[in-house]
Image 1 (cartoon, helix red, strand yellow):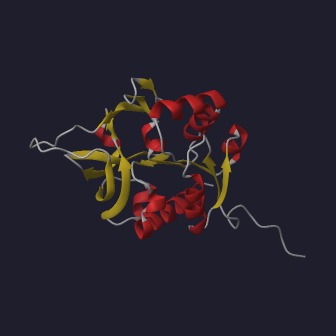
Image 2: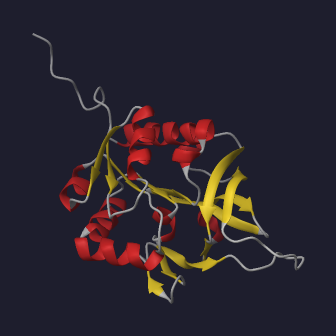
Length: 222
């Protein structure tokens, strides 16, 4: 008779938070290709029981916050972060962590990080018109320390689709910077969370490297 597998031998289980965003299946498939066991769920209990939590998303800041708040998923995500469960945010999964966003009026975010989310300006620092949204590949320069960064090159290219950018109150949480009309925070991190403005699931080999790094972080945290 074979022995039961230990937690370290089983694939790490992550919950992809489902609040009605349209890109969840592609995110789930990308995480599975990195060796994670994935559940796409709108059940707060499933979020709380997972080894790691992933919050992706596309759409409007206000709509996303209201849906997560009404369903109880906001509280579940906050509890996951506060109990040191590895959290990976993608696009809205980064923006919603801040205190507020200004899309369609000011909306209160999760408040886990100090700062706000603002629209890109209509022109760059030199006064030249800036096309908004940013759509396409852009370079990210990584900096600082975090378990995820141990597995990533110093710079890499990722795929962005966004009209709004985070403006953290504390530059110390910024671990990735990119340039679009000026330097902006493309990734932020604390010991128990890592969140990016770009879309790893659309970023081909560089996205795979980042999701592999997330798998290693989740496995080490179990």
